[in-house]
Image (cartoon, helix red, strand yellow):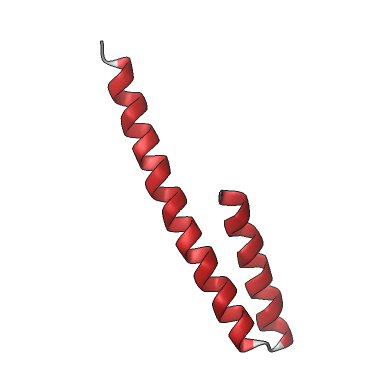
Length: 55
């Protein structure tokens, strides 16, 4: 999922360079949403892994 975030971020940067404001804003917002989803899943996996090792 982090890979998709980076892809949309690159698309947003390239679109912004060429002046496509709407496409850049859309790709940036998708990248931001995917990043936060990745971050939440990462934190959940860290907590679950930490709880599993405490036996």
